[in-house]
Length: 145
Image (tube, rainbow, N blue to C red; front, side, top):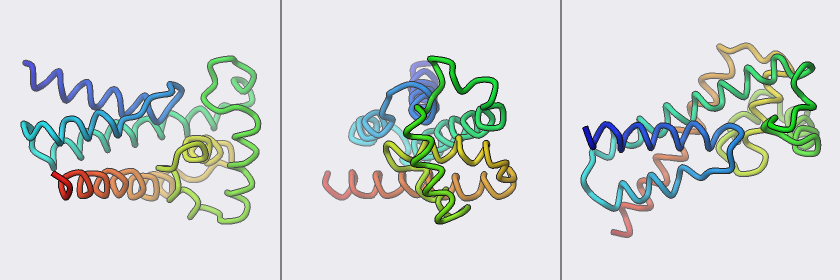
């Protein structure tokens, strides 16, 4: 039961970190990696699934942004959305490979929804970015232990 709660906590943290809450899933993942108590591949899979799902939530919010944009809980401020739209205008769908990045990553996933990026294009690019980030983080963490 405790293991299930650990994995659910990591999943929830990773999901929230990709959406409206100012959280960092990297710290939770590193702590669990350093504990040595859980399979590395499973930790990466759980964190990745949660983080990608959080980006899907952002994409869905972007699809309905006109109705939600002025709500105080909305995950991206106007300035961040404008910055992300400029990135997207310049680099197109490939900018979604930066969805892992702090500050601009989450707004990029909202912008993808606003611009009606097809889900079949959105999901693989965001998944590659999110999984890649966790793989690099795990490799760096385990290399130094």
